[in-house]
Each structure stands twice: as structure tokens, then as C-alpha cells.
Length: 102
Image 1 (tube, rainbow, N blue to C red):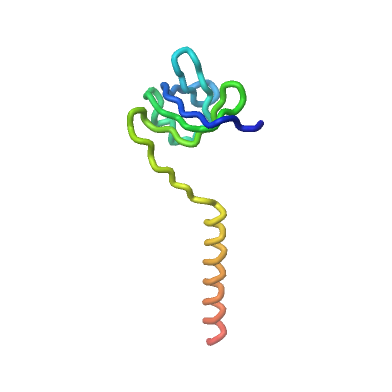
Image 2: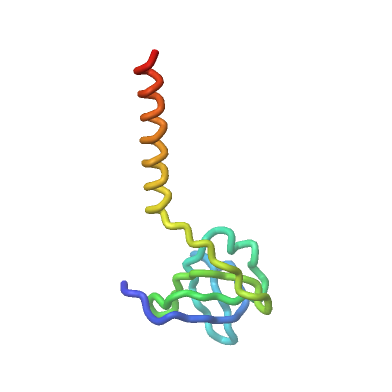
């Protein structure tokens, strides 16, 4: 399902039968969030993310309400894989050279 517009909402975080819920007044949003967000259950939080379906949100960030928005660490998996591949190649080169001069 395509994602909708970006949202920034404030409400109370609750545990629901299928995951986290954000209660705003009389409305309820179902959140697709990471596991560390569970520590904020029962607190008032701010949520940013994209709308998915009728009442779903794919969360980008969740943080306690009234606090400044935390800086987002953007670590791209492609960069990690590239760095691992280059590191492996460098180690293989060094070991090959060491075996050549034995």
C-alpha cells in the first residue's frame, strides 16, 4: 500500500492487541514502530511518520512530548555493506601479500 502524507502528531502511547497505539482525544492511530519505542508506553509522545491506510502510521521517530526533536542518525545499509566489502578486500590483500613473501 502506498504511503500518504507526512504527519506530526502528539498523543498518548498505549499497548494495543497488535502493537502500539497513539491515542489523540477520541481518535486512535496504529503505529508501525521500532521496539525501543515501547519504553514510552503510558507517556505523552510526539510522532512523525507517513500515513498508511485508514488509521496507520509508519513511524520515523517517536520521542517524549515537550522535548526537542532528537537528531536522527541516518546510517545507510549500503554504506555499511560497501565498507565491509572494502575492508574484507583490504584484509585479503594483506594476507595474500604476507603469504607471498613467506
